[in-house]
Length: 557
Image (cartoon, rainbow, N blue to C red):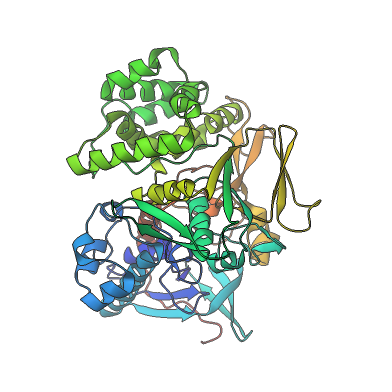
């Protein structure tokens, strides 16, 4: 079998295989020279100041937990990573590159475990998979080395764990960046007006890279974080912008593992799905609202929950923040979050929404076209806001930049225009009959969803066996060939993440690449999702791994 990619999904898939006693030949393909770090945590793509937004307690252990690994490091290694031994905690957040080093050590440990258990594991670093073709009984795979040498293989199972899909070229015109990665490209941005499209963690990553290229953060005598620009960088000013013009909230304290839900349970949502597509979103919202009211009656009264529905709950959820200055709100929210962390206080309404987002997400593949749009406009936005909270230090840094007059927030609404053609460098925002010019502009809106046409494997595309995911335009019809179905993007997959192929071809291709899953699984990003996907895929492979005949290697490496 083959695993393409050694980021978190590939690692958790491997973890689910190495304990299996049926001997396997496992080939692992990685385009980078250092397998095991993953693009979101690789030092070539990320600045050391960029923080991951997953606390140690939430990160599923592999051969060790993150805190166990950190605690076992010698003092000089902790110093190199910039971590004080006294700061090691299950509730702490660490730089992305630290998670990358943790993941790499776990990957290497898994290879050792698998080899000890009788598996043959070959790690092919600096190998880019350039083609996949489904045959009747196996799967063809072609890879290229850095030297341009092409090698062909055939496997019984192939796992596409290719992770995030970032453009090869970030700066597509002078001063205009279509991605904040690799972070090193942003360091060349000169002082002046800088625009960042987005206000979430990806945008914060871009902000941190630009700001630390032109200044430093420090704590004053009172312990408050401040920012000082470098000499010659006085003209630097960053404007972050989004439709709502809101900053993310600070990570909030809650019990982990999650307390079980009592009303909006997985079984209750499954029953709502089984009742049919008609009014499915409204049935799910009823479960959501009842659970929320039971968990936090005061919050339910504050937002008049009994009068709300799936279409207007988001308006009530964001109402208080909409009316406040974003930095004043951020300061109050940070103070509350820090107090609650010190005293182990859980804000019940936030915790209830957090626990419900993955349960409610189960309805998404079953929604008809109209309800899918309603979900995207409403509940999806509040779920993302609730679970995409950021480390407290990230909020502190943004407040420090604002106090130094280096950061502002712009609310775009829906009537703005982004113009890159009429300016020589950067970009121009046209909003409310006003023009805002930026000498550098970064699109930091994050990973976009991909569909079949975006697959980078020409043979797989030309075969036409892999189909786009679809949703019903009516509540009654259920035939996938019916024109009432409309493509939603993504890939049509079964419960084991295998593309649903109709031709007599090998069905053991597993699409575990996050961008191709987002259309029907909007909350599938992050390491916990990688763990869940890896568990499902590895279990499916183990269930089929009864034949110990080695896979055919057409050209030896």
